Amino acid sequence: MMKLENVGGILAVVVLVLIQGCAAPQPSPDLLAPTDAQMKIRSLQTRSFDIKDRQLAMRGVIAALQDLGFIIERANESLGLVTAARFAEPNFYDVVGVTVTVRSETDGRMMIRANAIYNNKPIEDPKVYQNFFATLERSLFVTKN
Amino acid sequence: MACLAIASPFIGCVAHTQPDELFELKPESAANRAMQTRLFETKDGAELLSASAAVLQDLGFQVEESVREVGFLRATKERSAREYGQDITRFVVFLLSTPLILVQQPPILMPVDLHQKIAATLVTRPVNPETTRQEVRVVFYRVVWQGGGSSGQQGIPPGEQRMEMLRDAVMYQTFFAKLSKAVFLEPFAL
Image 1 (spheres, rainbow over the protein chains, first blue to last red):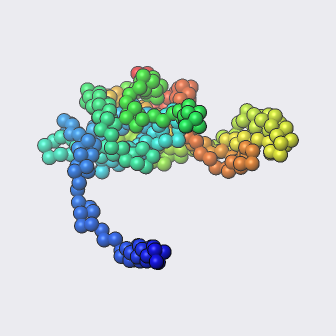
Image 2: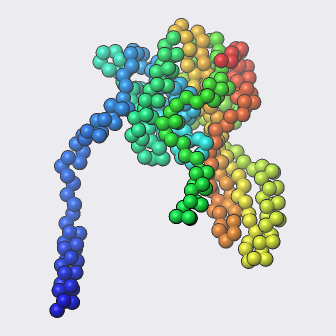
Image 3: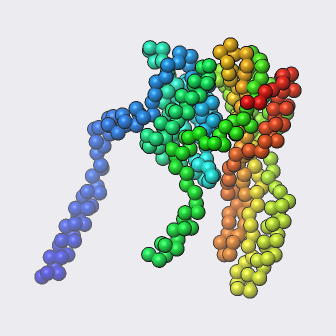
């Protein structure tokens, strides 16, 4: 008798799993909605600079990345894009990639946003972006004067 | 537990640099910058960029990407990476490991470098507000592909890739000597 109950229980679980498997998972309606975490990362990655000339800002970005030992892979002046990468020296297996966008703001300032990845995983550590912007600030100051 | 204790020092040998350290200027950053950079007294940034492209072409590079507005060039060349030294080492290691046959193991065949792609990225930019002085910064690096080999019963398939920055000062000096000839200007070091 006990044995039969056990079999019944297992069958019930199997049937439940099968039914669950048949139903396609519904995407939640807020799948693409902005989350607090996204906003936080965006604000970490973005900084506004008191520069009017976008080309000057881009040259500053390129110089800062070169100072940090990055290899500039691509630059697009009309879109204000710079893509660069470097190895996590001393090992040459891990790669850090960064894309920087330079956009004009309405009040004559430049908004600079950096997105960094470490071996295809996004970097969310605030320290990384703080260090990058510290170097960029120095480079922009040198470029301006 | 004991196994872990023994293994941990070996795991520690593989250095993993934290990402935030990679976005910091290092003491050697200034030295690298000085080696990779020269200043030229000219107003014409475009001329300097096209002369740089010509020098890279003279050195056998193919220009792959160029953006005049921000003074950017990227060029590559592919060459053989064979070195006699590596072949000799491979042979010596093979000879020394032949006694492994006695324990039913094949001798060790070290993989050697076969092919390489050398790349250069170059950026020119004005360094003063009157734009009478331009800076040229060039960075060389290479990607190396290795051939096959074997270690014990384990075969090492060919095609393993390795990349490295080229930090040989003579290479940069040669490049800038050619560039200064091409633009008829005397370069200044930082």
